[in-house]
Image (tube, rainbow, N blue to C red; front, side, top):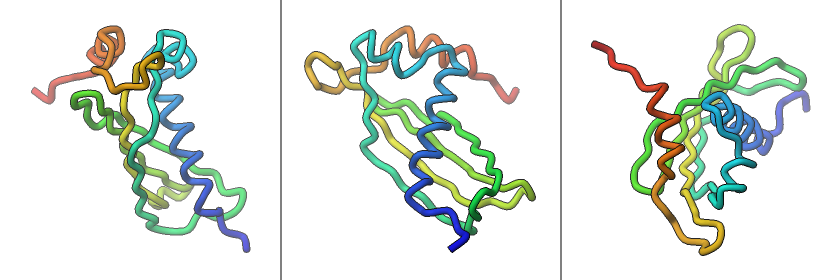
Amino acid sequence: MGYCYYGNYAQYFEVGRVETLRSLGISYKELEEKGIMLPVVHYSVDYKSPAFYDEELEITTLIAEIRGPRITFNYVIINAEGKTIAKATTDLVFILKDRMRPTAPPTFFINLIEKFKYSSE
């Protein structure tokens, strides 16, 4: 049909999330090696405009909030012309791999995030 299949967007957001964590200095693999999993528990997307087959897209990913065991990511996809294609949110939960129970974000993770916080003052 010439349009990007809507199911692909979840993969785009996952790539954005993985690369955001990597830019902070931690990978999903390292989290799992430390006994932490981060499953998605909520996903919502607002499709603003269609993406076309083979169109170059840019995904901006931000950590919006960490509250208890939950971490929220926000995403914006734009095309090469700067048009917003989609906006989305995912909520993930820190899970102890050996117990399969929610847990507070590990201290090492919070320390990585703290390096990227800034004040608007």
